[in-house]
Length: 373
Image 1 (cartoon, rainbow, N blue to C red):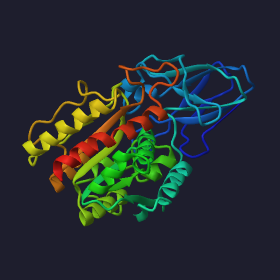
Image 2 (cartoon, rainbow, N blue to C red; image 1 turned 120 degrees about the horizontal axis):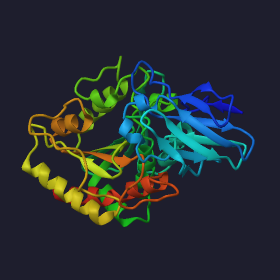
Image 3 (spheres, one colour; image 1 turned 30 degrees about the vertical axis):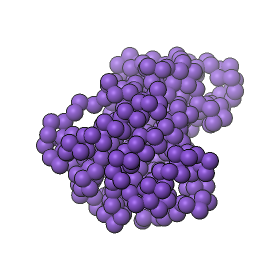
């Protein structure tokens, strides 16, 4: 038997693999950080082997409530990722009981979105004559900070995703969004591109994604706490993106994430900003109402507590950009587990559901654009 994480976004440390029914593992910390929760590894063992995989430090991870009612993802072909029903957490150890049907099986916290797929997404998008692919600068590991500029409409709509690299559902979401936005047979997309220019950053944290991090970049920095004062030395990803925003402006900002604990899809706004106005509140209401009509997977009853006025954390992207550009700004969160209101026992919340939600968000964007034009 062999266990490995020596590939894109791999993360696991083997403590003891001498006995298939008593395998001891640990998740590695993000580099220069205390954060850890993302895992992604391969097990090679004779088919029909009963594996008992025990992640012994799960109880010390970043978000331990995330393990409650959680089911690990597994795949034989790295395309279809299904949930392992026999996943359990006792407060200290996450245990995955699994009998393999083939000699090689992959396990992951959520279905990975590889760097190769990221590059393919960018390259395919630029083939559309309405789309331009631009590199804003380099990350600390020397990867491109890539931006897709789509259309030539007067309003500026920004979408960023995967500031936290372990939240791979965010880039699946963007893939679905781009599929619809670039569909020449989609009348809503055609109309939206007449109304706005879209600026899309599919992956804000390519270094952390490749390194197998949960939450930080190559330097161990949480990018979603860098928007007030980013630097080339610590957070070039945010520095370059915010600089481009200053150059072209922002009318709508959407930052796409995943939540380890809450089994819902929801948005969080900038109500705690001192600059928050009744006009922005009205735009938020328009957005949410249209999203509820567009997608049964979206809801507004469960989400994060709303900050009191003046108590926003201004280092967070949604608050910082909403304030900087006096615009409607939303963080969108998807579950690592499942949508508890519409559960899927085989796949849980999945790449396909993330893509579908990404396609559906075009309707609320269009509804807000009609209000601000």
